[in-house]
Structure formats: C-alpha cells, structure tokens
Amino acid sequence: MENVAVHLVETEADYAVLDNLLWQVLWAPLGLPRDVRSRFKVDGKLVQLLAMEGPYPVGGAVAIWKNINDAELRHLAVIPANQGRGIGKELVLKMINELKRRGCRELHTYARDSSVAFFKKLGFNPATERLLDHEAYIKYGIAVRLMNKQLSINCNS
Ligand SMILES: CC(C)(COP(=O)(O)OP(=O)(O)OC[C@H]1O[C@@H](n2cnc3c(N)ncnc32)[C@H](O)[C@@H]1OP(=O)(O)O)[C@@H](O)C(=O)NCCC(=O)NCCS
Image 1 (cartoon, helix red, strand yellow):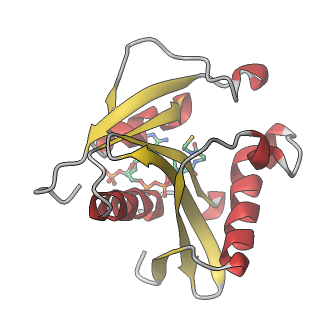
Image 2 (cartoon, rainbow, N blue to C red; image 1 turned 135 degrees about the vertical axis):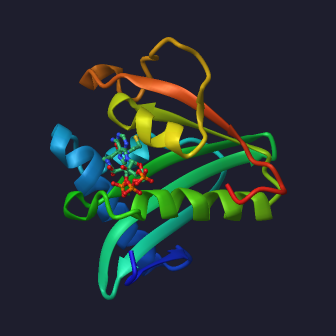
C-alpha cells in the first residue's frame, strides 16, 4: 500500500480509467459487453475513487447516493495482481469518509458472495441471512447479499 494513493475522480480522463478498470475486473471475466456498466446505471449523485500506484490504476470504487439515508457502494474492484495489499480496504474507508463529509449516515452494498467476508471485516452487517438475487446479476448466476453499515460521525470507519 505504501506507494498507492486514492483520489476522487473528477476528470473525464480519470473517469475513463476507472470505467476500464471496473470492466476488466468485474465484468470482462463474465463475458459481459464493454458497455455493461451503463445498463446497471441508477439515478443519484456519484462519488468515484481511483487508487493509483504511480501511473498505474490498481483499484476503484463507485458509490451512488440519493439522500443522507440512502447511499450504495455500487462497485468496488482491485486488479487481481494487487489484491490482498489493503487497497480494497483503503478504498472503502476513503469512500466512507467522503460520504460522511457529505452527511450520509448509512451505506449499503450488494456484496458478491465471494466478498461477504471482506465487507464483514469492515463492519458491514448482512441485512438478511438470505442471499439475494440482484436483478443485475441473476442472469449470470452470481449470488449477492445485501449488507449495511451505519456511518457514525465519531468513528473512523
Ligand atoms: C473484494 C476486493 C475488493 C477486496 O480488495 P483487496 O484489496 O483484495 O482486499 P484488502 O487487501 O484490502 O483486504 C482487507 C482485509 O479483508 C480480507 N479479505 C480480502 N478479501 C477477502 C475475501 N474475499 N474473503 C475474506 N477476507 C478477505 C483481507 O485478508 C484483509 O484482512 P486483514 O485486514 O485482517 O488483513 C477484491 O478482492 C476484488 O476486487 N475482488 C473482485 C471484485 C469483487 O468481488 N468486488 C466486491 C464488490 S461486488
């Protein structure tokens, strides 16, 4: 993590880099089309983060919020060769701080089955014991679990 820096995506160029990274990590392995992200689109204000190691993008995160009680961590991805270095955790913590700065009090995510343990470590609680079939993934056989985290003003995460 020493050489990795996380920043807010505020330019078209950064947006394109993040968009490509998300596609490579999340959707290309499923054989989904390059424009799939636009098909998953929902309304709301975007907060987007990019993790860079020097000139190389290594991870990214996207949250969408409609009001202070309704924020969703929509996408989170770390390049496979860089997983296990603390980058995913750093992206989630930075996202939480950014959302708190905007007044958000609750964050939820539809965690892929394989990342539920990761989110539990970061204090997310399963909203239900049942795995849900998210409309965006049902077709591809990916089970997801709705998980919530309260964003306390006084704690670091
Ligand atoms: C899930 C993902 C974002 C985690 O990012 P990462 O950078 O590899 O995770 P980190 O190195 O920050 O891990 C933080 C902690 O969670 C643990 N962890 C990470 N992935 C885990 C997993 N799949 N299951 C259990 N624990 C996990 C780490 O061991 C570490 O624990 P520690 O703090 O006790 O050392 C990354 O693996 C990824 O991009 N996966 C593919 C896409 C995906 O599933 N995205 C999730 C949203 S759908």
